[in-house]
Image (tube, rainbow, N blue to C red):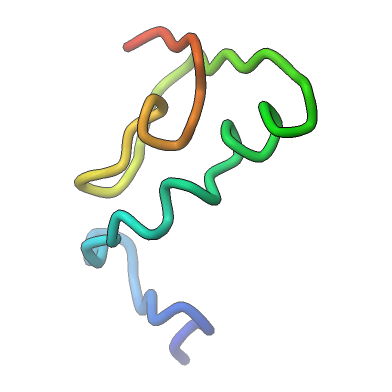
Length: 61
């Protein structure tokens, strides 16, 4: 059974477009007035980073 976003199994990660970044959680939290920090293992698909998702501060693990 395929998922609503087209993920059929682990390991086949689609390329995400730059359109995702401006709606990332870091940007959303910052627009609500929060400072944002991301720490921990980053298992993002290729092309996505904590910085690209709008986090002001991040720790690369």
